[in-house]
Length: 106
Image (cartoon, rainbow, N blue to C red):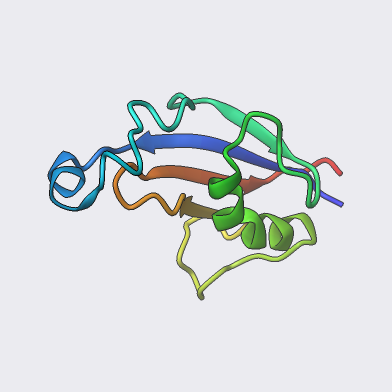
């Protein structure tokens, strides 16, 4: 089984959406995500890498599992590297983009 490198590519924050839609009484998050751009995690199968947000893992784990088992070319040529995927967590206010890449060694 291959391992998958998960690299934090970009963190965004949509203050206008937060102000308009988020309920600060129910979700008073100052800094909900503590990953840093450039940070790398290594996934080995279904196990979520330590330090990776559970919500982000839920968004990316189907792609990770595909890559672990040799899948490639998601969505017919979507990525330049067919053994990779660009996935964002499901936080619509503060999304984080992750690059998933199958590693050569098993």
